[in-house]
Length: 168
Image 1 (tube, rainbow, N blue to C red):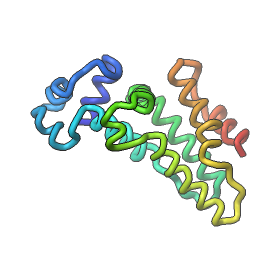
Image 2 (image 1 turned 30 degrees about the vertical axis):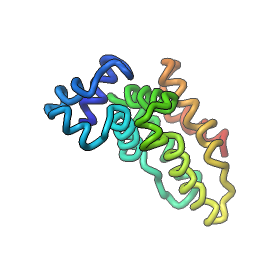
Image 3 (image 1 turned 120 degrees about the vertical axis):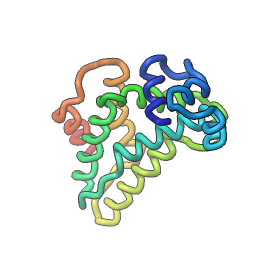
Image 4 (image 1 turned 135 degrees about the horizontal axis):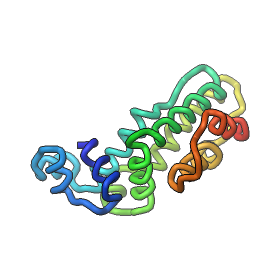
């Protein structure tokens, strides 16, 4: 199901396909999607969150520097990988859509902020100074997302490390 959604987003963009088209692509009945997710937006949100959480999990290396560098490298690989731009476009579209599925089930930004906060809380517990989650979003994630969304150049390891350096 998730791959069918990702493929359709890559081919057509967000909002340009139906539950029926996702079901046909995945080889299931429409009713299966409605039974499990309720509507298309809830399925799309599940796809974005699942990809975000499984491909870019919160690392625990024992230091904030290590955690942020590992996490930033994971995100860079994910959003530049084969399905990355489609999932990134999906996350952006869902975050700004305000549609019923998003309101009823998930808030992507809030979920990612909660996860980042857990990493930052671990740093505080170890006695390390740590930025707040919004600073990580603003100074590490946002520049990477902008580069990918607008085709502004590669996310080289040096560029990604530089973002973390400037934050810390």
